[in-house]
Amino acid sequence: MTNLQRRLHKLEARTITDSSGFAPNSPEWIEYWMREIPRLWAEDHSEARRRIPLEAVRCYLQNGPDCP
Image (cartoon, rainbow, N blue to C red):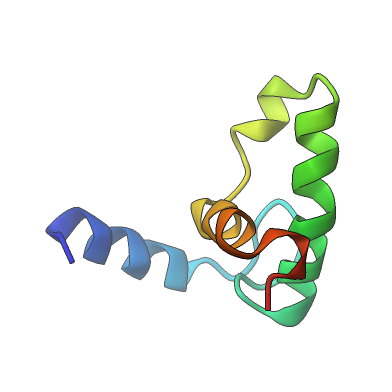
């Protein structure tokens, strides 16, 4: 893990909630982003796409909407 990745994980761990209103990596957070990612990509929400957390994108790309 690079220094930048470690710093990013530390920063993300300090965040109580994100734009979804849920705590990162909670079941509610995962469920929210698995619904939102396809909707944001299907419509023209280029500004909103920038706010999708990297961890949610990774989960979606690896597992699709069935992300644990």
